[in-house]
Amino acid sequence: DTAVSQTPKYLVTQMGNDKSIKCEQNLGHDTMYWYKQDSKKFLKIMFSYNNKELIINETVPNRFSPKSPDKAHLNLHINSLELGDSAVYFCASSQGSPNTEAFFGQGTRLTVV
Amino acid sequence: AQSVTQLDSQVPVFEEAPVELRCNYSSSVSVYLFWYVQYPNQGLQLLLKYLSGSTLVKGINGFEAEFNKSQTSFHLRKPSVHISDTAEYFCAVSDLRGGNQFYFGTGTSLTVIP
Image (cartoon, rainbow over all chains, first blue to last red):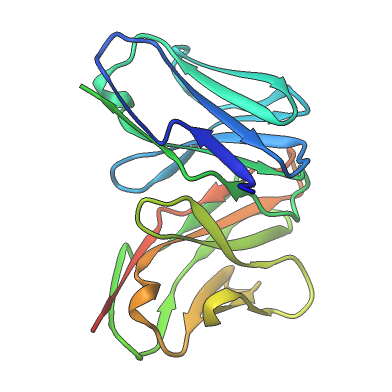
């Protein structure tokens, strides 16, 4: 069983479109995250949810909207996609205390053309 | 605020040679430290973590790291690398404030040369 799974793995879309990436974890964790990894491999946190509540919302355009229907899911919806949104997006989860590690999904490679 | 510095963006090393990947952090409070590995086209996988206790931490695949509080470092080492160790390596910290937020370094690309 995959601990943190995200779909789709690859996403190619045109500028201006709206798209969603789904994430599910079966680890029973309280905290879930979205990270963006750019072409230089730099990992930047975008959002963090704890028990369905938004905890961290870094400086991210409001075209990006996370949705957490329950503790096990954290989806990312992106409106009006731009070329600069092309990146790999990683979902992760953790138990929510500082002395526990995060578990990552396999990533979604988004390409905006 | 936390910050993590990985000074070496790329490290080429010959197969069976030792390697050290450097990580320094800055924090005004106690931290927890992690090393992750990312193989091509995959997610991040935990290599090892330092929470407390012994400053030498052993992880998977023969890697180990040493926590040095006075130098605020957490360098990753392996005595003999394999081709399969070619990957991106990330150092990360979390702290006791503000929930469970992870701060990642910019990564070190390790290339093992046959």
